Amino acid sequence: MRRFKAMAPVAATALAGILAYGPLAQAASPDRDPGPHGAGERVIKLDDSVKEFSTVDVGSTGLSLGDQAIGFSDFSQYGRRVGTGGFVCTVVSLEKRLRQCESTLRLAKGDITLQGFAPFIVSFPTRFTLAITGGTGAYRDARGYMDGVNIDVSHARLTVHLSS
Image 1 (tube, rainbow, N blue to C red):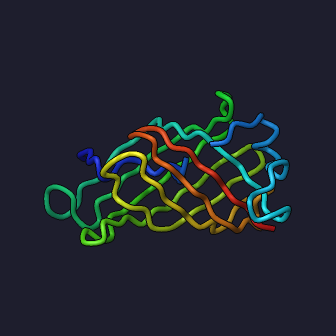
Image 2: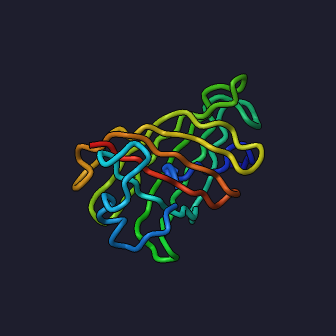
Image 3: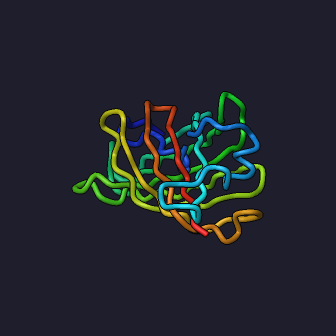
């Protein structure tokens, strides 16, 4: 296993994901912060701090198709931990510099699952958007998207946009 700058975490996923600055109650009840698309959108902002990270180097040595970045994060708001998450990003195009990422955000009232393309990280900040593909608990009918910004190799800001 080797670390590659281009494979740095997405958080989420992210998950991910991986930045709101609201109290714990907001993470459990995000509808207190309507999003830019009106009252039908709920927004959850999270600070993502990667706690575990590894890469899997497959195929030829160095960055190649199929290489993976795998990680686990803590999410916080106002410095208070409000959840955790995991992500797996797989290199799918060297030419386009893209990874396919899957991430799960675990919050107090359930999980939110995410998926989509994210660019290789070659400098900071690096922005990405993942689609919400489902959820559990309070998020069982989740749909929408998550915007993320990788701040450095172990921190990201995540904004989850839930549509009703």
